[in-house]
Structure formats: C-alpha cells, structure tokens
Length: 286
Image 1: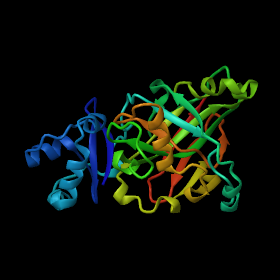
Image 2: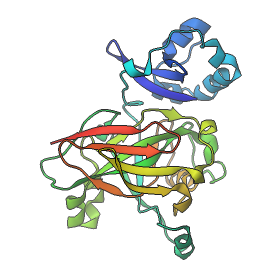
Image 3: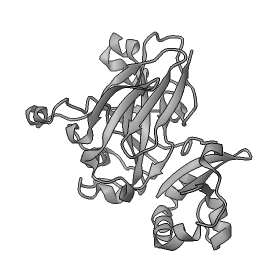
C-alpha cells in the first residue's frame, strides 16, 4: 500500500494510492463507515496503519475501484506529515564495493545526527540556500518511518515496528561542517534541509532491501548510485541501534545514509531516486 498527503481546501489529508489516482481517507471513511484517522501522522499514532492495510489488501482495493479518485497529475502533494518527534540521520554508511565491508572494524558505530522538524519540507517545496553558507549539498537516502513505539528491540524485531519506507533528501552546509567536525549538527539543521515523500510505501511492496538502488540526482542526471547491499549498517540494524538509546515513536524518521552528495546552486533541482519508488524532487533557490 502507498500512502501520501495531499492539500485539499486548506487542509492536508492522507490519501491512498490506487490505479487511477489518490483517494483521501476521509472519502474512504464515508464510503465504508470506517473511522481511520485522516492525517497520516495521527494514523500512525493511533496504530491504525496495520488495520487499514489489512482492509485494503483484503478487498478494500477492489471496493475503491469504482470510486472517483483525484488524478495523480492534479493532486497537490504535501509533506507526508509536519511534526515528527525525531528526524535521525547517519553518515558515511556506504562502501563502493561489497568486498570493502569485510574490512570494516567490528567496533565501529554509526555517525549520528538529529534534524529539527523546522527543517522539514515536502515534494516540490524549495530548498532555500542560507546566506551564511556558500556550499550546500543534497544527499539522497532511504527514509525509515517508525510505525509503533519501541525500545531496545533486536534487529530481527525491527520490521515489526516500521510503518514503511520513503525517499528522503538530506541537505548539509558543507563549508560550515568543514570548519569543525563538531559542527555536523549545525550544518544539518537549517530550514528546508530535510525533504521526504512523496509516498510512504509499506514493506510488503518494497521487496528485498539489499536489492534497492539509491541514487542522488541533480537536474535529471544521476550523480551517485549505490545499493543497500553495500551499506555498512543495514536498515534494521539502524532501527535497533537507535532503539537501544531512546524510545522510538510513531512517525519518527531515520535516514540511512547516502551514496553521495550533489552540490546545489540556485535554480537546480535535487532528486532522490530509489528503485521501485516515485522520485522525490525539490527545486533550489537562493
């Protein structure tokens, strides 16, 4: 199942993707007498995603076949949601060749950073280059969306607590970070420096994680490419790792590292491409 958030009459409402377009969850509620939360973050907080997916896969998709959907080309896509409690990222998580994984020291741990929710934008929103930085980059990454509260879970348990995956773009003021490694958090926290969407894709539609290809794109061209198989820390390890430190909550987002960054200039379009997912695009402005 694929879920997104669309703008309708001044509101931002969750919608499910069907063959002909998008159907808002408030429409689903009216048609079926259901009481699903109509905002995506609230749907996760109420632990309703599994029930919605069971209904959709168990005949709901066919039930919606005759319903008039909002055509994809006409829908105004918003951020999946606005106020996650946590946006985590890790750095330097890919090697170029699988053989390099064997040389990774066993006592290494991920390089971690947090982004504020004020950095959050959605598909099509502008990445604004801050006046105090002259070198901003964008990095394409797989985003993990937590679906259920969890603490101290194992790597094997992690998928049970994940709502789905989504493309993300992580922006960095590289010149600020270069001044001092301790400035990593500062270099990541500017407004518009995190984008995600356009869809939350549930795990049953993703397929084998190791086969996923992640590409950083700029102006229609791929600048960097790699596969999950070449990650030092795999997605479910990352979820487990963070859960050892803190309680993970529904809607928390974890970025999983990038194959490489693209330098941004005014007028560019940054892209996150993940095989099997819709591309995340954000224009850049000064």
